[in-house]
Length: 442
Image (cartoon, rainbow, N blue to C red; front, side):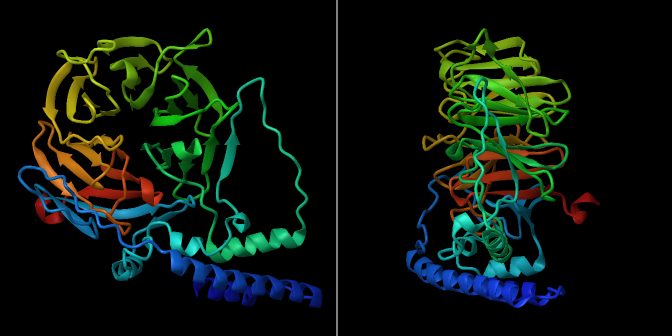
């Protein structure tokens, strides 16, 4: 039992003098942990879900074999996809290592969540109310409401117990179902979590992590797409309020976009993307079949499409996701069955069909070479296309080990060609690197 050994090491590292009362307190806490672990372990073993027997129905032409991206997978043309690490549900980032990869390869996908991707099986042993979260919370209430905090009487013994349990089992889970994802210049990952009505900002080093909470009387009601500008300001599309909320890099509210005299200018904004060099914001108003091109203050520069009718040339049908490359804007359109490519001013320059996915909103991303990535939620795989729409293949498969996904709903590729996959039902974000082997560079 890993918790027991870690707790014992904690006791033996204590160098300060210990009174009889303190010793009895520590021993009592140890017994509490052991009893809790034993009872919870038995309950957990009886409720472990069986393997999910999903066989991907999606096949690209020409057919491509779906394989896990562990430890790496070829993308063709000398490029490879390599696993880097995982942002876990407890806000911690776990890097790939030889030891952890060996443990992962021995893990049964039917019994455990990945050793590298969250330690859900371990965390579920300890009662959640005993665990201390590893990030701060931003309570962003809308005026005239304001946050109030009721003082809670917590004994020293309770505080010590919670910290010891957290030490033994890790921090509390703070992420439920990650959807859209992006990153900033500090390599922090920004994740929308609609199930919790929150947006998380996770720092790989753990020093600058926080969560912006939404809900009734909050500014944020229903987070959808997320984007970041060159100053690391965070933009959140609120699909319920019909606006975009802007926060600075510390989580402090800055301004609304799309609010005019108290009225929302958009009906149901979902996907957003920012061209950081040009300072432009692209927004998909799904319900109205429109894509807007704005400056970062919210002034509308172009409106693309035809309100309520998206069957004509240059029009949209339920656009959901937007991704930006150096000179192009890519839109996932027509109930996720086609890709439209626009120039920076919103004029269409290309269109191609993809496999329709009517099982929920999938993710969309573009890498530095212009290749397009789409996540297929039901099949739990990632499809890859060349800029002209030619299929490259797929990676991933259903499961919870490294390189496997369950209903991935968000994608992002940063400036270094790192791919971030919101592994929604596994409550984590996996990170991969698109790289070219040395032999291909010569």
